[in-house]
Image (tube, rainbow, N blue to C red; front, side, top):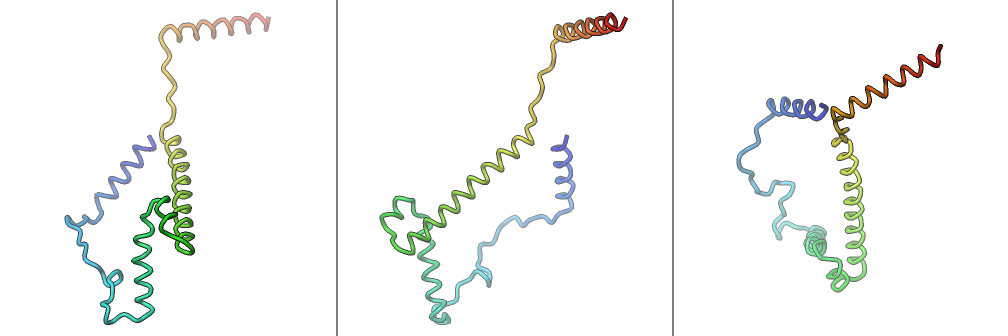
Length: 134
């Protein structure tokens, strides 16, 4: 029931939303674009070198990193990947908790025979209570 209500609320809100463009432009914005080499200061050049190096490093496997990196780069790599692994573990725990709350276990329906047995047991309990009260 909760899921149905939530889904209908989302669908209703989406009906009045802005339609996303059909194509996504991948052009660099002013914030993400790099300055031309001629306009870069020495500090910006150093930062871009570090950015380029880190773009290569962060995609290494653990074995490649142990072989190719050393010192501060290896430390930064291990710190980054440990943080990523920890975050993934936290998200798995959260996902399991969400799955448990969404997928509520259903009680199996009683058979006709079981309902008759329960009714008979209830009658017997009532009769026993009446007999004890006399």
